[in-house]
Image (cartoon, rainbow, N blue to C red; front, side, top):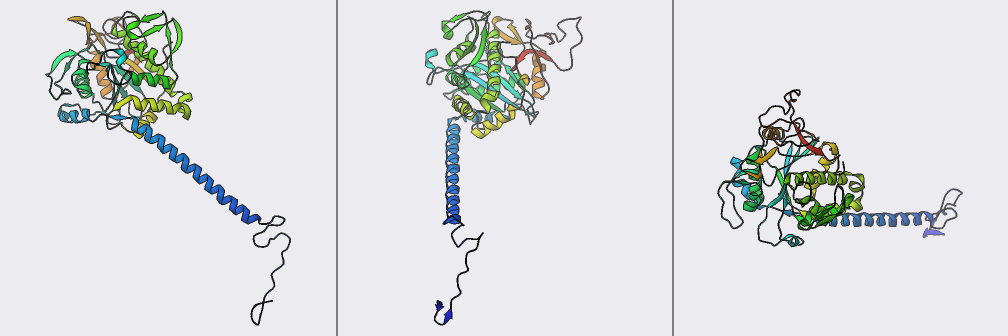
Length: 409
């Protein structure tokens, strides 16, 4: 044989043991080629799976991110009054105002009463996250607390005059911005962010974690709160949970004081459950929680993305439940109307200063005294409650609870 005319062709080298002719393997026709072919298809399949997973992940992210409602009106109004707002003393700390709205507008809220086009803050909590996220302190502001409400812009564009009135009127007068300015004027603490949640959103949050456990000493039958429960330990879901935190006349002595304490207990149990491994480390349980949470809130532009909320949640995840504290501002019945509240001084100012300067706040369980303070606290005159007791420590102590205690403690 020849390659071309006059040129002898070199013979093909013989196949030897341990080698293969091109495209074949010993005893396996086409082995390497088939293996390369299989590897290419495997790589393609893996790539498609990764792309599909990324696509699904992106879809979920976009869906959750799109659930969040942004409140730009409050930011615009607050900018008008920037000069009168308190400065941020501890820049690494964060103060978030959580507002529970009693609005009757919107899906699922009309069952609680007629929509009159107004709303008040059913619950208001100032959440202080310390620098380094070592502690979280949630301070309830009584809705009946008598405070100075600044002149605020109403929804129709008109403005109210500055007046001395009960705290939850601020939300009715001028919404979130008016409430933030009232809190800042009261405490001297700059509010960095805010979140507003309505009845429907609260119920969905509770349902997303499969309910929260409570304990009742006596059965409850409260038509106004749509609540009927037997005595004992039980798990409450959406509608029942909302009734439990809103009920006033049918539980305890009927005061707003006991209602706020019950809200703090319930929120502590909710935080504890969300922080458990059964929720945070289980995607099938975490997604419904995130979906409910993002749908439930209206927030400022600093927290209106899933990334912002995730960063906030991640920073709080390392806080032990016994360092997540709940308390109410020191207060007592208002001098001129026992159905209203007023601050107890200097205890209230001590609390506000500790939070403003990001100093430790010690919260201990105990029966609240008539002057609004508890075990280890100071009275209205600034002296120890018990004259024979040791002098109080430099760190003021307030009556409250932590998330580790739970509702059934």
